[in-house]
Amino acid sequence: MIFYFSGCGNSRHVAETLAQGLNDTLIFMPEATREDHYNYTLAEGERLGFVFPIYSWAPPQLVLDFVKKLQLAAKPEYVYFACTCGDECGHTEKFFRKAIQEKGWELSACFSLIMPETYVGMPGFKLDTEENAKKKIDNADATLERNIPRLINKEQFSEITVGSFAWIKSHVIQSSFSKFALDDSKYRVTEKCISCGKCVEACPLKNITLDDGHPKWHGHCTMCMGCYHHCPVNAIHYGKATEGKGQYYFRKS
Image 1 (spheres, rainbow, N blue to C red):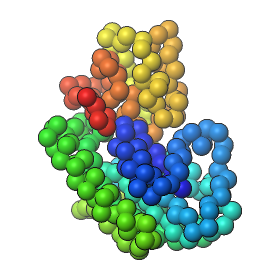
Image 2 (image 1 turned 180 degrees about the vertical axis):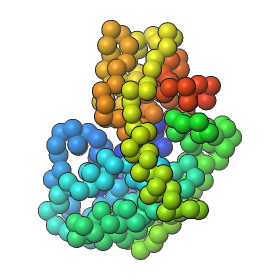
Image 3 (image 1 turned 90 degrees about the vertical axis):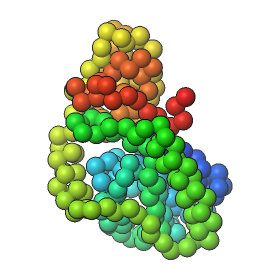
């Protein structure tokens, strides 16, 4: 069983690839949360997996909240996670390991996959070039191909790109990000909006509705920026930080 979260498709691709290779069931964490569905039963010997993106060098809070509420009929034998990041993961492994240890579970394996950048909500953050994005995806697919047999064999391993100044990034900067950078009131829409509703469809948290034909955000944003990246006419912006930065979502044609 694999629980996953994804906003722009990178982590969804990883989750789908793992599910196919492991012949496992996929469960979308935001949907399960909306349905208040936290009770599950694993088959004997079944692996328990989690797939999610890194937000400011840590797991998204919604992932940690879901793990906290998750209830299994029996203690899982093998727990792993795979995370996607633009470059580094910081202390993500420590955060996740602590979250499941509080439930009496043990982390068996984890690995990170460097995927194309998606966060452009602050000055200085930008997308990868198409060439770099393709290289990242190709390398990630190679990592998945190498690690799926290891998960099948229930090997113990940790392959996380921690990066430099991890404590500062995962604690100091991440804390500021959680406090100040999740403000969806900074989203705005330009006159280019065609009222197509793609932003509503793209939001994994169902935090957006159309109000008089234009998107309206409702204060429950995790800053995946799926609405920005999926807008077909680039009419959505986050303050002025996203102006001129382009768009990306997995396999965008």
